[in-house]
Length: 266
Image (tube, rainbow, N blue to C red):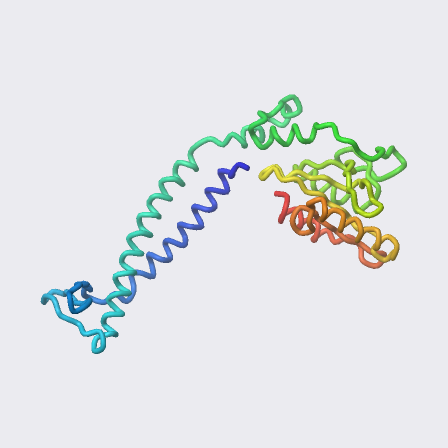
């Protein structure tokens, strides 16, 4: 999995903000003097060095001063390290913001030419194109009059599936409808999940099932069994199995659909 250039830039910018906060806080409340540690046969001794010289500090009598000077030594070292790290990150950030990004080349091509271009397989777009074009077994395609037409021009079985498909399509997220998925669980030998989806950035594959008749007891029991079968096949709800819901009195929540897409697929 490739870490995107933009992701690195975001990480660097966030870390720089943290470092600036550390540097700013380290400027406050500085105590004059430097703590010196000396190891002697009688034990460890602390001295404070200031403009007038060195002064021995007893651990019992001068604990407060020792604590303040020790903290100041830590804060000084922390500030120095933060400044060095910030300078290094700013240098890297300058380089990243001023170099090309191979994964943006296809996106920046004229729209009129994109249908004629095959993106390089080593880029995210090229990988997604190959994934989308792979021949996979699917359920019997629906024809005109049998279902509902999506923006991509295919037919799906419900209006809610149109909503999901069209949102994926408009966001440029590759998906396949009702692929054959072998599942050996109880009396199930295979299923056709509503959508198989590719996260182009991470190259992870997700399944999406829309549960559209939750008021129907028999339907709900069948879906619960299928979800258990998915888990045994490595597809876990909230990880790589996405679920949406609907009942007679509560239609599909489009905000929920958008939130799922933003959380897992972009």
